[in-house]
Image (tube, rainbow, N blue to C red):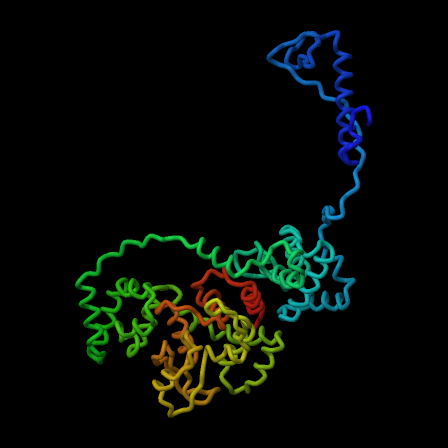
Length: 479
């Protein structure tokens, strides 16, 4: 090594240069060996010049002679270099865990998986995954684990049409496995995390840079005929003689009305311009029918069977079961099922104007139905509502379990919704679309379930895994 002048370098550098020098010597040896044929370091390829001597040269087809093979000694691996990953096997891991055999038997023998079983399965699976591959397994590892889970336990499969069945556990950066992994990484120091938490200032800069200017579509001009029809409906109170004309003009002015409502006015502004939506509430159903002609009656027609499936599926959740047991056999089964659905799909932390707030299961029901005694002034109660209840909700007049009448509270306006809870829920849901308003954050999963799996006005593939998982449990219930 002194001869080649590399003593001043480090051990790895010296070894690399020794190998390079040896390769050069080998190449030089080949050149000396072939000097009888040519003084050039390149020779003519036999394949390019068939029948010619190997000593003939050609300036067009030359191939450089490769050096002789040599053995490179293995180098010590640094501590921070990743080792080759080995795919995690849940089937090999689970039986050796405490209570693993019991979990296997319970999942193989059940038809409807409870939330406790699913949570326990995810917890054990992620524990094994992280102990084998670390806190940052690859997407391929997580996908393989998700598929293995549904192969081992068919009862946990996501039966949403169009899906393979494992997507609620992991799919493209979301799912129960990913959520659990994120929670596990929260305790890591910042310097150990692959994704650094950005400051509020960085988030604000990113939000500003993400904004794009969207050119407004050219709106069709409002015709004098449309405005005349709207004015007539606005200033002509409904009577027994003109209700048909109101409905006909309401249909004729649909496009005109949607342009105004899609401009995001308040519900109060919409009701001022179209007051018949308040004193002729059946027009809310008509508007929704014009928006979704084939899905308008889905809730009324499907709820009778689905409510019992929801109650039975909800019994697998301890907190839901407690609420179900509070209902007597002669109590309102519709209210029991809606309560079970709201508790099963409870969203504990909600974002309101960029601020995270917590909501208990009991409080979330107040965003759906609030009871007031008989004889209460409904209009006064609607105007006196608390500011937190910004989204539409129902006001039930009478006993909590057996109300006599329902009203939808829109802003601070009470709109009649009939005497049936299901008719009232149907109208309340449609109000979100008719008036172009968001769902209450505390009931987001609740409404998404109804929109995707009952009304079918929302693509079920776009809803959260917890919603699809509960929908699969509901479908698995046989009455």
